[in-house]
Image (cartoon, rainbow, N blue to C red):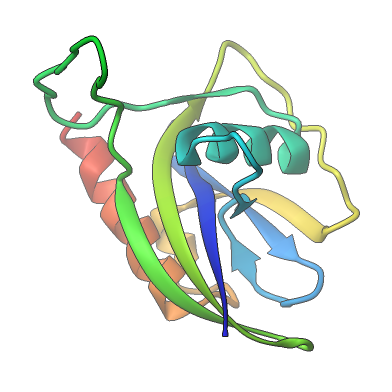
Length: 152
């Protein structure tokens, strides 16, 4: 089975989250995908949001970090969640280790979606999440993100 490390983002803004409808999978997802060579999971999440939606985003720090920094190591913003997912492709099953970050748009960023991989894009309130064609794990992650944002 193919194993992939992924970086994805839950984009939060004014009580809504931005989701994309994936062309191949046919479900609503938060933006994200495989990490490229020489890229951190956080960088991949920010890049994927930009590529798929056109939005420039910044990672939301949750909780306090000790900000460890030595000459050989330093602490980065941890992911909001790490998901271990089985994704069924036509070429076979993949295992995804998905580092999910909470992010928000910078300034007054406007959506400029890339429709190569998606069919729709939209902002959704927490109440609308349960009505979407969406994976159960994504739905739970989104509800957890709405709860976390209330405490920031």
